[in-house]
Image (cartoon, rainbow, N blue to C red; front, side):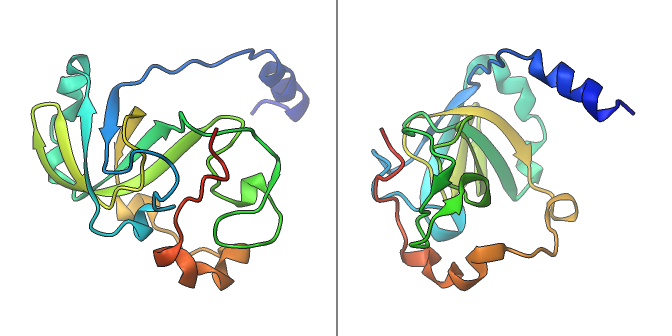
Length: 173
């Protein structure tokens, strides 16, 4: 185990981390405004995940999973603030207590239903992602790994708003 002070010093030495997209996500949403804010609020919305050909072998056996986790870059997110008024509330919250897209590292995650795989194209449903969003990674969704009994803080009182709440552009460039 690394002592906290040593770990802190090692963390401070990291200047930059770079990721290269492995594909592009296609959806009916051409801009952030109007896009559902979570995949649970995008029920029935279909899209495609186009993997770049050099990553095709990585799709082997993925069709056995009903759902996948898409990890992507919020390429249209705007200025970062450490306190935000999130979509489903009208009060200020700390950024890390929200899922607002304008973040120090603008990384998004969505769990989508995998409908079929054709070559490097994955057809998915429940897409809450803007068209042409750069894809960083794909992981299989495994309920035994990913599903937890959890407390959801301030969101517990606001979940009834999910189905009707859409992006209003407040976190975009």
